[in-house]
Image (tube, rainbow over all chains, first blue to last red):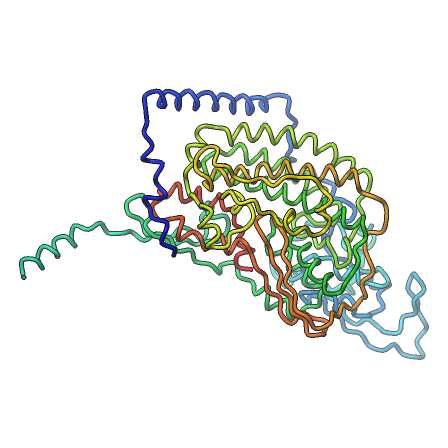
Length: 177
Length: 382
């Protein structure tokens, strides 16, 4: 603690002399400036549109590139693990095995041949920090952020999404742009 | 001899007992999770000790396990009210190590978002400071204008608060003409409404009585502690990194540094710090207007290799953030992860001034002093 600041030093304004003229001046200033402020707020009584929306009934349209719930279109996923590498909080869990040579060849929508069979693709959305680095790393652009933001759950395990599960696969037609 | 001892005992019994109180960590007036242990003599603060660490998230240690791109979301989370400025400082540091050229358009966009973020942050200060002093209306007005800025940022980056928008070598998304037009319309509105807000709060006699001559940080004390940003400028020191050590493209722009002059009381009081922040909004609007005139077409992201591997080096770079100077000390060892990333935060310096400001003040004035140095605990604890 430095020594050049004493409590007296901080309170020196209390020593200012208060004359009768100053006293009336203070009262006049208070009335004048408060009136000025009241006139500014008074203009908001009429003619100003409300800026809030009543949420569950009225919903704001989020911008196109809003970063909310992640969705992976597993049919186009080539199991390259680049999203898991880019993730700063390691919330993407991928398991993949080499595809049988005898099995029929499949390709993604953009023509990349699939060499690995995806066995598990899970994202822990409770851990996810919604930074968007994984979607940027994705070479086939199958991993995208959707504008869906209403998905609160009761337990943490319900926040883990297995994108190979049929019910989650069905989101494709609902939320993907 | 015994007689004297008795007198001493009697005097000891008559002495006022100091009461120890905890202000925080959940007290709304401390802006986050700051706990100040105050010893009070009736209603006067006799001693104030800030306790930190309630929002410590090991950000610096965690960054040692991330690649250089993965650090950016963590920079956002330090000062969540000025995330763009935090990102920009980090990106400048790594770009200087890599020697990356940032395209001109990207530099313009960076300046636009950083200045808009500065306005948003100062609006937040304006609103919460009025709440600290008992006025609720200005808070709503400030949030109304802040909402526009957040909306633009949401359209640009996809997030409202933690953007991850400024990337190594440029920015993520391009800004379109419609957004630029909306910003330029908003600048005119903002200038008008900010004048109105200042008349509502800053010129009000009650506000002046609460802030003038309260919590005085004079020039000497500001230098002693190493204060930066609006706190230093409020103490009458003309020091703004955008002017004195220009980074980005700030040397191109014409703007003034706002310095506290002690108009309503003494130089360096709470009113001066309020004044510096509010009038910096007007200067930021000036910069924004010049940006919108000068912005040119082109790419928004330069060439940065997919795996960032800077040569072993050590660098310290600082930028002017809304709350003060933010310094990044980065040490690299040639791998794709930082060896050490130390953040020099201005809020930490300002919190350490509290034991010196506090003694001798009324508790209500102490709240005004904490509010006026405008701390974000995310940046203090990291």
